[in-house]
Image (cartoon, rainbow, N blue to C red; front, side, top):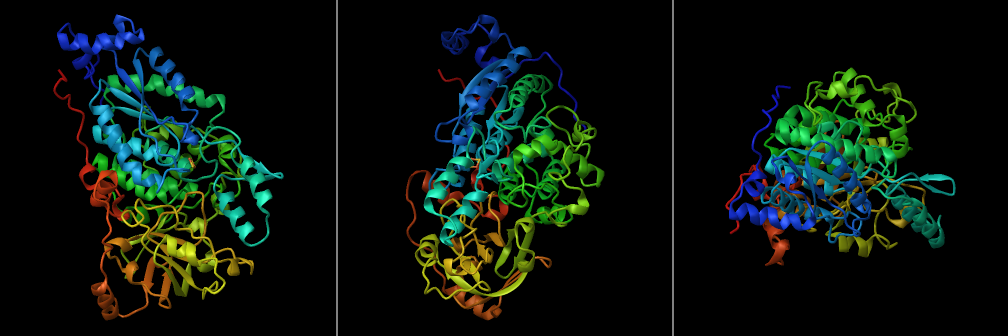
Length: 580
Ligand code: FES
């Protein structure tokens, strides 16, 4: 930690718009005054953008306008000037073809919103899965002081006195309906019990994972990740973050000061300890690419390999975010990592202190929720990175959500050329499949879907489910919802749509998965593989205009974060020419 606060007072970038008596300054300032701001608000105090992903079509973030008011209070209290700015909001639950296709668009919009407007720092008001990485990516590319405030998870769901987790139980219940164990009416009743309060998914899905990643990276105040959306302490957190960002601007404490390589290593280990989403792999790689940190898939395997999963939350375990909060939340996990020698203790946080100073005195209030290491859900809980002739650039699997007996498995491939092919065949009793087979789904990667949808946890064939089997090995170039589970190999790279080896797997091929050896192998000769790849031809139908074209032309592989190639890196926030 070598950060030295900048001198204060000094002239901030917002003064290029608001300071002085020239025609242009009067134009910028005068129009702002139509909102009733007194003249002294423009006196050089930090102008803080509250970048709000509120949207009624992003239900997980629908309460963020209320939270923004609390952030504003904090900014005013600390002598700043808050301005709430709506930014692109991609809802996981409804954006088509997938919210992931728009993560980079949102990041681009956020970056330009920060650079092109009179803002000295930003509060990133996020929640639903993609909103957190997209705003972190945009902020990283400007390197303006920024702090994350998440909306918090929903309260626990309960159906007939059983804990119901967002997403996790959706997959469970839909399999139960397919297996004939649940009626459609019961499914409907369960739906209503799943989402009973404002907030994001209450499991350790991608939203909770990314909230935890933001905190582990040092980009949110300590304890932010787990506070339920409706808990009054969520509002306190928002207000304190508002106060803090003003001081961060005065000190010039930037994302690049906080999101260093050690901070990313802390986040990777944290992901293993919480049993976090595989989506964090892609998002952290993309964020690192923006802030100029050299992070690779190999770092994920190296840092995560020996981390035990100690957070007993769905989908890997049994509890939900509400209980995680009552147990002490992420600070307890960070403390445990620190005690185990798995935390860079001096990594700087937005609080202006090393991460260890923030967590060293916290207490675990529930050892059923945050487990002692002897009772860990999985001893090697980090994301495993697989390599082999089927995934030369890598693939990932989440061991804590997989079946131990399938971690080494050899099986016959049952291949689906794309998601439509899968949907057309999977329920057909004539499909030649049993539980020893390996389901292979192609053309669901960043270019293939497009956008890399969360379809990797393919539902099992009904004839297998009816035998009481609940897991099979599944392999694809897709992603998987952080709320999902199973022995599911994801992000296989290069993806099928760009001619990766996955594209040439055929029905009946034998596939070997060996997670302990980190191996994913298609059991055909090198010559046969080369011959099949030489025959392969890309799909000719491609978008020719619009964002779909931009995405398709520039999106990179999952193994490097699936960012758009021209958006990588930090471009800073130079003040451009005036508009008149
Ligand atoms: Fe928004 Fe899960 S769908 S957080």
